Length: 58
Image (tube, rainbow, N blue to C red; front, side, top):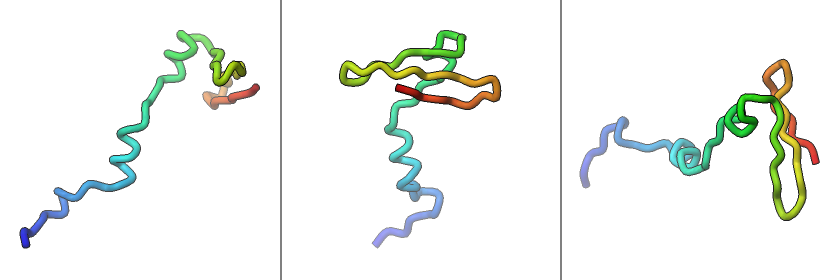
C-alpha cells in the first residue's frame, strides 16, 4: 500500500464544481443589467439588481 499525502487528496465537491460551466453575469448582460435566457421555447429574464443580486423570472 502506498502512503498518500493529505495534499494529494482531491475534495469531491471541488472536483464536481470544476466541471460545471461558469458564466459571468455581466458578460451575459453585455455590461447591462438584463439578459434573456431561452429554455425549451420558454423565455426567462435575468436581471442584476442595484444591490448586485440576480433575479431570474419567467
